[in-house]
Length: 213
Image 1 (tube, rainbow, N blue to C red):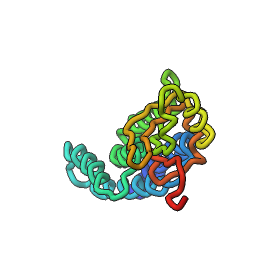
Image 2 (image 1 turned 135 degrees about the vertical axis):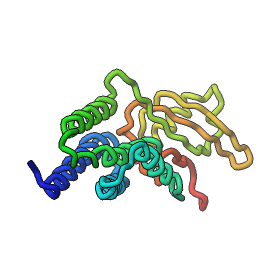
Image 3 (image 1 turned 180 degrees about the horizontal axis):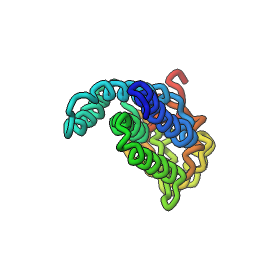
């Protein structure tokens, strides 16, 4: 039977391995976004150690409230992250809450099964088995003469030329005739097409002339 230190290190290694598999082999291949990898793994490690040292305290249902509190503090940010990354961050934060019980050998097999199921579900969802995901981008567009229904084909061709995306359909929102701009949402099938078109706000890109032109 493993000693206390051995159980502690084994439990940590198992938790970190699962988190690493989620980030490296499920999240990253689907997004190719390195911005949040440090945050994901740092959150996972820190939360695991904090909860491991609290194992001697009877937490009970308080664990659920603690997990909710961990998630809620993520909203106190000046730079909000997209829903997809927020979901992954919640998963990464939830794993150590669950796996911190690994020092108790009586639940090892349940933990292994639970983590395995989480990995499989995330992998299946990212592979889009049984689902069809449609990626979108909001664009601020300056050639408002092309938003006329009779010139929709020209608009679509211009957007594809500028963005490099194979666009399925478009939706025109707010039109600002004072600034000669329109808010357009473009829809396309393959999210991997957008990786070159990086923007600090992944939901908004601007297609038009520079202010100095």
